[in-house]
Image (cartoon, rainbow, N blue to C red; front, side, top):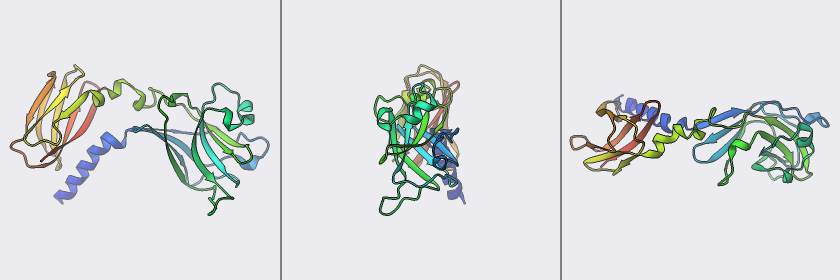
Length: 247
């Protein structure tokens, strides 16, 4: 029972650090193909920005559209284009990120267009994800517009990954050495006072210090067992958790 609680506690704290390090926005306002209504998208579509500079497209189990030879999904910068201009534009003329094949009748095996799918791609260096505001579906083989949806662009107010202030702790706090044997330091380059709590995997606090402004705060681990510890670091309005290993 203790081991189960320990693992739950460890997973919970790591989830705080890693699991929530993403931003998701829903896409809506589909139904923009005025010529072939069966191409129009229905169902759940959302876009997730991850903290490892990747972007993920999620299609829900209720996702549905007409079949096609190679229906592809793209993230697109509309750059103020009207809906009419976007409908008539070829994908090669738009700044885009391609996710991949949503449906493909000419593929072997055939890729059914309906139902849940997920695509994850890297964001090219220097490309501003904040400029993308459309998810566009397109048949590349025939340069045929399928449908597009709109979403609120990622920005610092709706995505903490893009908020420089919220990333200050993560970027300016280091633990050294890690792994360690008897002691380690929390190096603080933020110049902000920090509260530091150290937990074992059972969730018990084993060390703590309040409101330290030292550039290097040392902790002795000589009286602690080898294993994994979690170091919770808080400033006035930010909090991060780092994993520490004692050998």
